[in-house]
Image 1 (cartoon, rainbow, N blue to C red):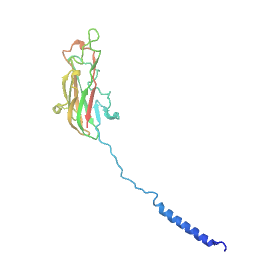
Image 2: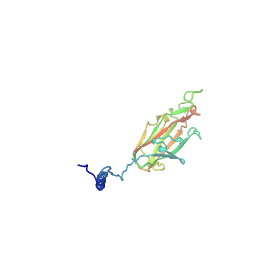
Image 3: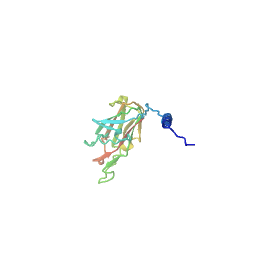
Image 4: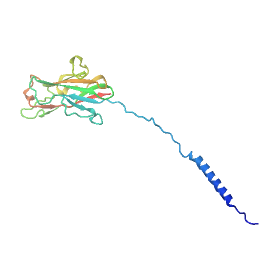
Amino acid sequence: MGRPRFLPGVWAVCAVSAMALALSVNGTLSSWTSAVVSNDANTAATATAVILKESSGGVDCYSSTNATNSSTCTTINVYGGTATPLTPGGSQTMDVTFTNVGAAAATSFSVAPGSCTQLPVAGTGTPAVANVCTNGDLTVAISCSPGTSYSSGSAWTDLVQSAVAPASIGATLTHTGAIAANGSATCHLTVALSATANVLDQAVTVTQPMTWTMVK
C-alpha cells in the first residue's frame, strides 16, 4: 500500500483550526493576568499644635522659628535692658504679649527663670562687688493678665511674682487655664533698685534668662 497523502486543503484546515484554538485560549487567559483596585479617597491629617508668639515694642519672636517648636529670642529683653542704668529708687517696666498662634488651645502658660549671673562677679574687686542677684536691693516683679494689654484688675493669681531678688523668683510660675487659638496674655515685669541700695551695687549688670511655655 502506498503512504497516505495529505492534501493541501487538509493542511489549510488544520492551520486555521490551530490558530482559532490559540486565539481562544489566549483570549481567555488574558482576562486573568491582572486584577486592579484603585483607592482614590486616601487621606491623612496632622494634629493641631500650640505655637507661641512673643511680642514687645514692635518685635515678634515665634517658637516655630525652630522645627522643634522651641526657640530662643534675643531681640526682646523682658527686664528692659541697660540703656538707662537704674539709680537708687528707680525702676523700669516691660509689657510683653504672648499669643497662641497655633490651631490648638493651650491648657497652661508658664514662665521659668534661669540662673541669675552678674558682671562684675560678686565678691571681686576692691571694694568687693555686692551680690545683686541675691541681696534684695534689685528686685523683679511679674504679673500677667489675659488679652493683648496688661490689666491689673484682671491679673491672674497663679502666675504672679511679688518683688524679690532675681535669684529668688519661683522655680516655675504657671497659669492653669485655657488660652484659645489666637488668644493672648500680657505680662507686666518691673525691675527696681531699692532707694536704700548699697553703693557696692554700683556698675553691675545682671543677666537672667526667662523661658515662657504654652502647653496643649
